[in-house]
Length: 311
Image (cartoon, rainbow, N blue to C red; front, top):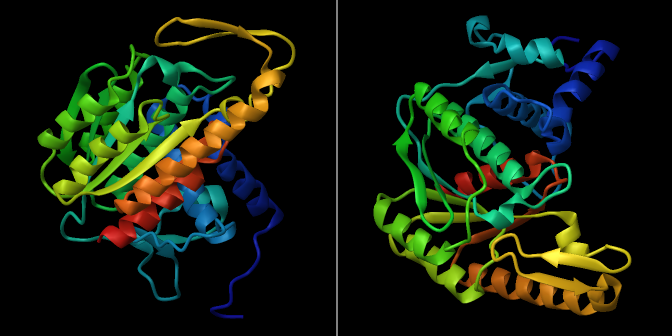
């Protein structure tokens, strides 16, 4: 019937599953082209917002909406149609909506991971988020840090700026020890114009120093969202037998039996997370935890929810 949506065909179901798989970090690790990766992640995410809603989120994406009868076909995104059998219309705004800053931790601890490291997940997320921000007509800038700040790129809303950001992300290497607090304080002084600050890190540092550094951005009126990236192993400590652990930043080693310390480890880990979350809530900072096996759609949905509140 006219105006009534129809279910996807078998061909469409296959295309839907195909595009959605690009939210899986393990699949993304096989893609070497970062521009292609970012586009596939965002396309998969947009389809997912309509076909497989992320429970708990209420988000809207202002640069696209589903086609309605009478819309001008010249604004249809035929690439998305080719992947999903669904019609989406591009929306346009006359000016930049929001200034965003993506701050990515590239310290040595981020290099840990089985299959996909925290560092790789952070790059995928930063690339996809930059792509999504520019589709929203937002200005986006990027900075990376370990013991010092690297690659400071001021926010711009031009599409050619994306290629500059992706080139930086594509050339990154895991760095040295973390000086989280001092780096973020310096970045807060560098980025004073009010906007949205996105920090991607494992946040392996002193809790009070982390919060004080993030509060520095709040002092200048920024909205702040932090994405804490872990591996599942760091949450559960599931290793059998006797294991030699090595700190990636200090090279300090510890020989232990994980099963003997697992209960205390998980208790201390949970308490640290509880206190960090409490401190962030008290300072109106959004705190999101993801693992390297989680769909990137979860993080992107949280970003859009934060962006909607920040506007």
